[in-house]
Image 1 (cartoon, one colour):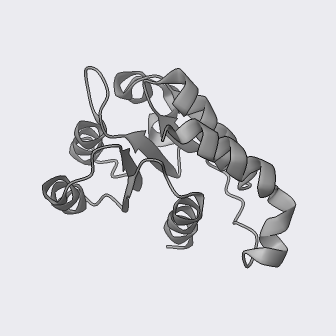
Image 2 (spheres, rainbow, N blue to C red):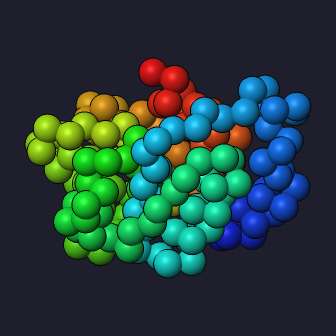
Image 3 (tube, one colour):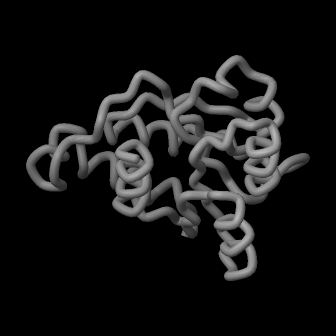
Length: 149
């Protein structure tokens, strides 16, 4: 199943106003945005919409290199990135962030989850490793935990 229909459905049935009543406290508002990095423009836009519907500010990047070259590189509260992208994947992006002395909390999303990659991600400090299609509730929990720490 492609993640876009699931995300569109979840956004439609879970408007932001429901968070305070049905899913516990509303998400924290933060001054810094969540970066979404995905070379699939439609998936990136859907993730931005989902994160925005959760009450966060999100900005998108079409590649890891675009993100690293942007002014936002050191100004985001966390990064949600696809694992497999052209030129530089999500795991490599996390390595670059650590090497640059900017270990931004990261959430990796992949259509091909495996234990070896999960262990590599954890060794780099990746906060969450989620399978596509991403469960919106798992993503929300990961975002809330990152921002609470």
